[in-house]
Structures are given as structure tokens and as C-alpha cells.
Amino acid sequence: MKKLKLMAILTLVAWIGAATAENLGGYQTKEFLSTYDNLKPSGGDHVAYYYESDKVDKSQYNKVMIDGIKIFLKDDAEYKGIDPKDLADLADYFHDSIVKQVSDAYPVVEEAGPDVIRLRIAVTDLVPNKPEVSLVTLAVPFAWVADAGTGAAKGKPGTTAFVGESSIEMEAVDTQTNEQVAAYISTRAAKKYNWTKGVSQGVNDYMNSYSTYAYAKQAMDGWAHLIRQRLDAAHGIAPAGK
Image (cartoon, rainbow, N blue to C red; front, side, top):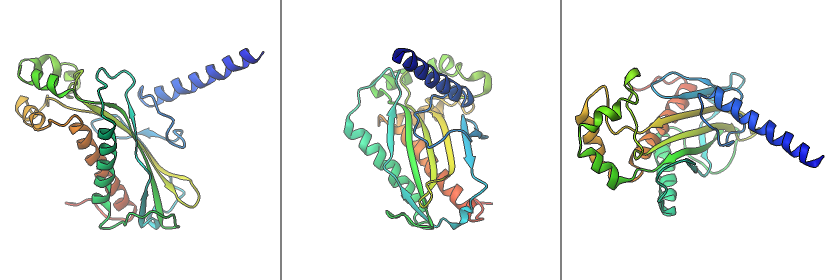
């Protein structure tokens, strides 16, 4: 009887996970967010899902508290030669990038309060670059044709086995009620070549990226900028240049 109950529970968990993945374009969540129920597709040139509560006055949040950033490696990554210090440095890099983006207008604090929004962030499906192999493939420009072909039909850059990639799960939580105020999931596949702009830009960008996590850091800078944009929007501030 106990075995039957256990099997039923495992089946239910698997079904819920499969349903969530289907709703999020096949992305397998890490069960990190407090809930995934309200996420809807967001625009852009990569897979993204977003939720923002319409029951909370988000302009009340003038300060930011950042939880320790979590990192999940992709289960089927072909290259997993990772120094733990690299992961710690990567988490610190993301934290510092967010601080740089927001702190001039929204102080980063360590204590909860009615005007404090708490950010919970997990970098997921991290696939490290294998620099010595990726740099070799760059020495064969004609490989670009086959490489780009993986995304050519939609005008998107392709990826290769050794190009780093990463995704993100992020939510903003009210520090008084623990209510999810906003949530975001995004997948950014790193580019070795840019199909729409040609080989040269891809090579130039990548040849400058000897760090194993260069493209993950690039994605983090983009996500940090997005956080600032969302905070500004909540306060009625238009993006710079508009």
C-alpha cells in the first residue's frame, strides 16, 4: 500500500514538472521560485516569461535587498570541469552588477522594511565554455555555416557544444508579506557567431572572451540592467534615451 502511495506521489510530481516545462517552452524549472503559476510569455529575441502583480503598488519599493545568488549547472552539460571558486566569483559578479545598476537610485540594504523589495535569483542551466576547444573552432571560419544553421531558419544565432549558456529564475518578493510581486524566467544561449551581422563580430566578441564564463557574465549584465528598468518603470521613470 505504501509503495502504491509513493508511486502515485512520484507520478503526480513528474506530471506537474512536465506540465510546467510545457508551459515554459520546454524549460525545466528548478523549483526555485515561490510559484510559477502566473508566468506568461514575454516579448524579445529569446525565450522569456514574466509576471507582475497588479495588486501591489510597486512604487512603494525604494530599496533593494538581494538574497545570495544560487547557481545550477545544466544536468547534461558536456563539460563540467568547474572550480568552485569560479562559481562563487560568478555569483559575486552578478551581485555586484546589480548593485552598480540600481544603487544610485535604489539603495541596496540588508534589512527588511515596508519600502524594501527582496530579490531572489538563481542562474540555471549553466553550461561552461571549454575555451581551448572553442578557440580552436573559431580558427575554422567555415564552421560558421554549419553552426549558424541551427538557428538560421528564424534568423537566430546557433549554439555549439562548447559555447557557454545560462538561464535565470528571478522573483521580487515583498519583505513584509513574502508575496511574489514579480517573477521572470529567461534563457539566453551564448553566441559564438552572429548570423545576422556576420562572422567578424562573433569572432571579435568571442576572441576577447577567454574567461570560461564570459557569456554568462554578459547575460548577467543584461539581467541586472533589466532589474533597473523594472524598478524605474514602477516609479514612472522612462528608459534612458526616451
